[in-house]
Image (cartoon, rainbow, N blue to C red; front, side, top):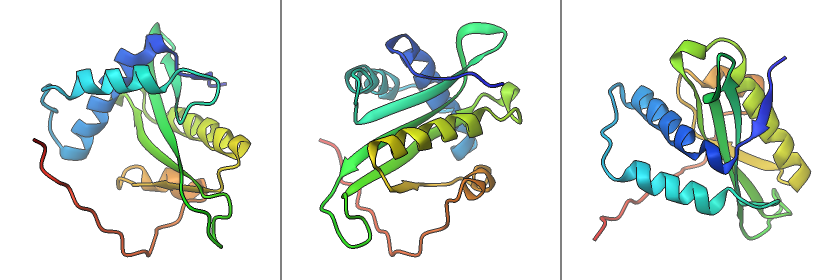
Length: 160
């Protein structure tokens, strides 16, 4: 059995490390350190605590190294204006689904995803979105996710 638990404040450094692993896999190269790790850690420390946070993480520890993580998933809840297809207005967003390369193919990401989906259900979140990498798409499809056909667009403004 895979032991999944909610992330603790003591997991922040490992969550940031795993984010770097994920970003490196997506971009096909090692991610430059820069200022993002410190900013990510600060955001996690501010947003993870509390009984009903707007951001949650589920993790699996490395079986051979307690305190070090093998996998994680993060999820956020946004409150938008209710509509016919989403009467609560709550939307879950899944991100940072990652398993260390040496711990893959053991069901860790699936276990983390299932824990997050259960958390969303308990909060009444009925619409859940994610951006899938080609490697993750089979897992997400097996959990019931389907591709979107909406004309999504994005604007990124420069930082000052």
